[in-house]
Image 1 (tube, chains in turn orange, red):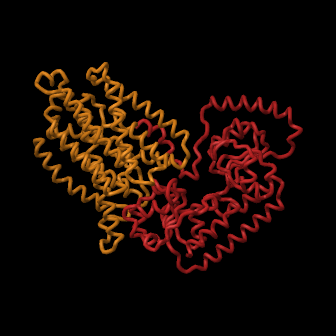
Image 2 (tube, rainbow over the protein chains, first blue to last red; image 1 turned 180 degrees about the vertical axis):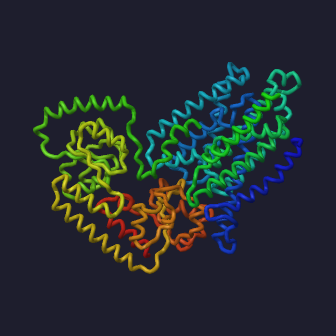
Image 3 (cartoon, rainbow over the protein chains, first blue to last red; image 1 turned 90 degrees about the vertical axis):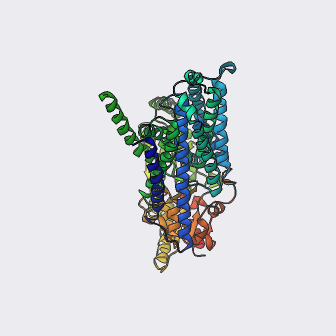
Length: 325
Length: 306
């Protein structure tokens, strides 16, 4: 099967799986009673949540592919440059300042801005005397900024009153129920734009996986592509984090699984990762809200529990094949 | 994600008002505390004559209330920062730490003869207090029926038995009356208790709050879930369509009620449609298994039967 046919299959299967997710919920399996207001309200909640899961999963997986290509590192993921810690710090300050009640947009916007600001800081720290930063200095300064943000966060958490802390912890575990429809639409718009840009620079990303020098020699404007790529991936991640909090694992695992299934060509890999990540997160979230009716389980727990073993199986299969060859 | 991992251990803890993580767990700190214990006991012995009799430290707001209610407030030498009632008594009592997080150093500095704690307090801290040679008494105070016996027990420990049994009998009688009244009810409105708004948390089966709601004439929708405190799914609440919503938290800005009213999809819930979303309770009466609980139930009853 060529990657293109596989992609076509994924495109056909995705709507079915997403529809399946809409049928699952805390109030029972199947569509709610659409005759009354409450049933319709429940259906709207579910559709928003599945849509939220899809765009967040797509953003994280797509950003993961871009980061892995640009940083040429298998451990690269959307949060590697400290974006998550920065956004976490912003969100925590926002929650503990008590302004989240005033408007549902305040927290997501703060998290998004903090994520973008973190990338700028990391980039500035990594670029030595105006020179364009190397992959290693980017990753290192990302780790350092991330550590600093985390320690400030821990300090605030240690000092904070218990009530606010509760919200902070649960925000960090992630929740895919959008707090407002408008928020979902805005984040989805940013994410769709981000995925499109990533797809447009796919040939350049292919070249960059060979190394910056080689890519430069075959005519890729590496500096521009790296800046555009990092910026796009960070904005997508920021939008995803703003919408749903910190959801781990999707941005690391889905790109690897998809590269295994679809091959390394970014022209097919990016749409495949976006679709696969979106469906994967929606399905995990459907499981998280159905396992114990009425009780919410953080979706990050399910992504790691389902994704981990799956990832191991794929990795082992590949290793065995490599050894046999 | 590192941060999440580090504070992820807090995840399993109960909701804010029952929150009691371990205070200290490094053996180094224990060593310091032990050294301090030794030095303090030395100086405590030196000035023993001016501090005769019982010196009691309470590690929970409900116990502080009980100690004062049995007329032993003069014996109280330490409290937590959460103990705020009765206000005129507690202002003069030294704070020895947060609720569930006592500072062993400050606790020892008060040279108490008796430490009162509830069974919510973290057990490792409790063990440490005992290791330091202090008399620690665990007072069980989880359900409504525990309150009169807790009052009596505190009375015996503090030598205020007469007043304590009188108070215990009064609470018991009031609760029995409420129970009898509640038993005669033919229909009960369904109630959704929200103990925290972001994310929504509720109290399930066998919780103190669920018991109070039952006595106040309602039926907790979370009684069907065999968990004490948990994050409630919005969809589940909508599907239960509660008649009454109780918001038992202080919203930092604006009213707690508005938080619920502004949630997408909630405007069709019966409680919202009929204007039966209530906030502004005296949460200390409802969340604290103490001697003022009957007042709390009456307040709740007034709202539920409105």
